[in-house]
Length: 310
Image (cartoon, rainbow, N blue to C red; front, side, top):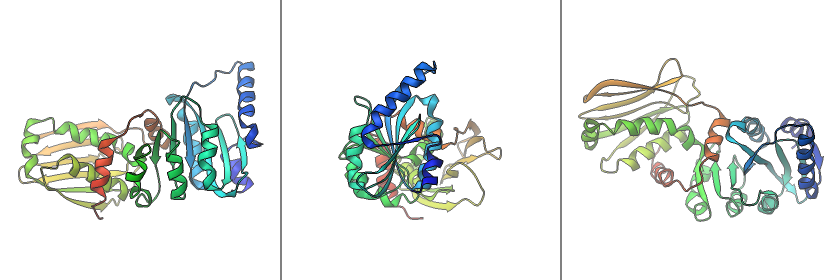
């Protein structure tokens, strides 16, 4: 990473030796107290690994995490150095150009003791990810091409809890659809559902949602169809439709782009409208930081979605 990239990531940061990181952080904390600035209550160590461009957007998201509690953020990029460039500012530590085989040792040295360590994986070599899984309480996958890492989730799950940020982006959609099945008439129509069509801006999210539906309704042999959305939108999914002989269930983003509408035709002609969640990278990773346990629903959905093709 070039000097300009480092400066862009950690504005007003200072370059220090790796051995001086803890001492520098202590001095920054002491300076805050002397200026009577309220310190953040740290709740976890958040390690972000990725390319310079993906680290930059992650750093911006971390700055917006105040409402979720403070974290010790460690940004890491791969390189060939055994002694990397280290830069620190008030909210993050940047370890630039470190050889991947040293990642787990660096995290073990810098993580906050007795607090969870979460790996936010935005890209890199699988060996580094596997090593980090051994020192983490949770791994949150967030790659542009999810198939690169989804095939390794079973192996990673032997060491730590694993999820994908796409799963967090689907939370509201999953909740709304699940609530519809509280209706007795919808449950009665379930065995007759035959097709699921997911129209989405993100193919990985669409397949993951389709996998969740098929793994949640195993008694109904569903065919999943993935379609690419033609309109722009911040939501990963534009619409979902479950169709069968007795009913048609539809979820879609309303034209205002702020609400999600759910309708059931055939058994219930009413509609339900709920607000969409805050669609920001900061809110999604903040949601994941609040989870501590293994998510078996995600794992089942992922196994099912691997069998789906676009």
